[in-house]
Structure formats: C-alpha cells, structure tokens
Length: 218
Ligand SMILES: [Zn+2]
Ligand SMILES: [Zn+2]
Image 1 (cartoon, rainbow, N blue to C red):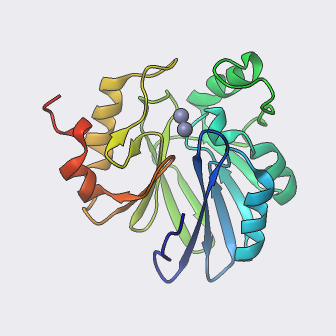
Image 2: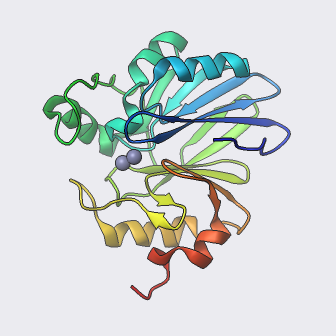
Image 3: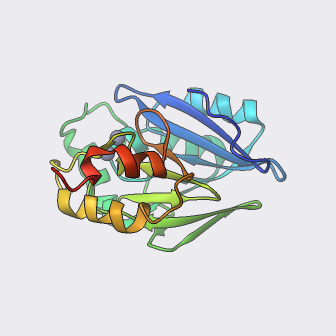
C-alpha cells in the first residue's frame, strides 16, 4: 500500500501483514527522525526493514486494540527497537486470553508483552514534533482506541472504508461501536484522512456520506 506523504513534517509508511491482512503503520517526524509503530500484527522483520528504510528511531508501539492480528509482532519489535508498548487497559484481558487459549487464532502466535503504558481517553502521545491524541472507541473490543494526529486518524478495527469493525466477538457491542463512531469520529472535519486497521484508506467525509453502517437506515 502506498500512502502519499501526508504533510511536510510527517512520514507515514504502511505494510499489510499476516494472515488477517492487518495494516501496520510506521509514522515518523521528518525533523527528529523519531517514530511510532501502530499495530505490528505480524512480520516483525519486514516492519523493522521499513523502519530502517525510513531512518527512524522508534519510541513507542501503539496497539489500537488487543486482537492478536494487531499485536502479534509487538514482542520482537519491542526487543529490536527498545520502544515502549502502549495500549488501552480494557483490552489486556482479550490480548492475553487469545494467546493463552489460541481461541480463533493459531496457538503458534507468540504471547505479546505486558504494556508499559496504559492508554485512556484524551491521553497525548508525543513523538518528536508530532502530537497524537487517544480517542477511546469501544465496540469492536472494550479497549479499542483511535489515534488522532494532525489531519489524520488511525482507526484500527473501529472504522473501515464503507464498513465498521465486527462486534460479534467477545467484548463486542455493535450499538456502542456505532455510537462512538458517530459521536467521536464523525465530528472530525471531512478531509481528515482515515487509516484503518484493514483495507484501504478513506476520509471522514467519505464515510459520513457513504458508510452504510452510519446512515440510520439499517
Ligand atoms: Zn480486531
Ligand atoms: Zn483486525
């Protein structure tokens, strides 16, 4: 996937990783060369290669939620980069539960490390001169978050192009998911770039207009 450089001060790299085709994003400051990895679900080596290509020093790894296809490579990447691992506390149980039981996923997935930092609504994540805000959007999972930057938002499995995350798995709540998308994401400006956990990028305006799950007719 190719994402155009969003703005002068930020570089965004994206990889599609693992059997669930999860989007892993690498975001860095052009000025300080410090970076952030969002949702390293699998293929740690490919992610590290991209980090090296971009010339970034990774400070933080953020998981938008605890599903293993978004946290599967946190361990090796944390080891390779020395970055801290941050996620919402309400998904720690889901994360550790998956790796224990195997559940819907293969039991060969490595167990992700305990988060160093527990995120909550309104928390700030600062990477060099880049500033991100945590928006708690439970519904796909209890601890699902979106990460809002300057003109763009990483939505994990909360919001996709023309779709929303599944809510039929443990901890899911469809009404809550739609309510959170409406009240916390659809209030953003139309041209906000949406970088989801799976599938192509979109914008808030495009989803406001076309997303069938947000039209109040279903
Ligand atoms: Zn998920
Ligand atoms: Zn996912």
